[in-house]
Length: 277
Image 1 (cartoon, rainbow, N blue to C red):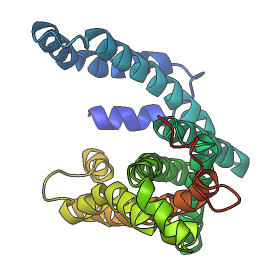
Image 2: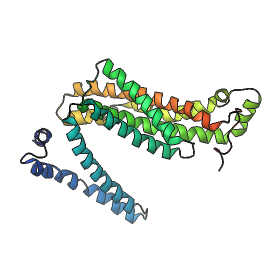
Image 3: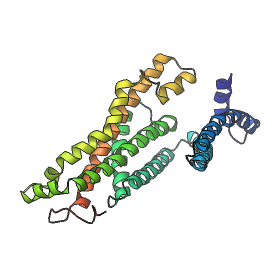
C-alpha cells in the first residue's frame, strides 16, 4: 500500500489537489527513521567522540538536499527537452569534480583535472550504453544512472590523484634518479601510477566480486522494494556494475595523465613546489 501511494504521488503535479497532503504523510517515515540517528548521537556523546554536532548537521543537510533534489527531478522528469538532462549531468560532474579536487587539494589544478576526468569517463560510458540501447535517453533513466557513475568516478579519481602525489613525493629520489638516467616522466613514475590506480580501483573490483553475496546493492534493493522481480533487478544490477567499472577505470587513468604536466617542469624535472610539505 505504501509503495502504491508513492507511485501515485509521482504521477501528481505539485500544484494538483492532494499532492502536499500525500507528500507530508510520506515524509513521516523518514522523520521517524531519525530515531536511529538519535541513538548514534547518544553513543557519540557517551563515548565523548565529539561528533554529535557534525552528525546532526550531516543528517539535516541530507534531509534538505534530498527534498530539494526530489522536486527538481520531479520537474525535470516532466520535461521533454534533452537540455535538462545535460544540465543536470553537468551539474553533477561539476560538484563531483570539486569534491574530488578537494581530496587531492595539493595537486595543482586538481579540481579541473578531476572534472575533465570524470566528465570524459562517464560521458563515454553513457554514450555506449545509450548507443547499445541498454538505456533509453530519457531523464528517468539517464539522470539516476549518470548519478551512480559520477559518484563512483568521483571517489576513485580523488583517491588516484591524492595517492599518486603522495607516492611520487615519498619516492622522489627514485623518480629523480630515473629521470637522470634518461627516463621520460611517464617511465619514471610508472610504478607510482600503477600503485595509485590499483589502490583506487580495488574497492570497485572487490564490490563486483562480492555483489549479492554480502549485501544487496542499492539499485537492486530499490527495484525489489518497488515491487520488481528479483530476476529483473539482477539484470539492471549487472549493467550497473559493468558501467561503474568502465567509467571509474577510464576516469582514474585519465586523471594520472592530466596530473603529469603539473608534477614536472618543461625540462622534465620534478616540480618541487608541488611536493613541498
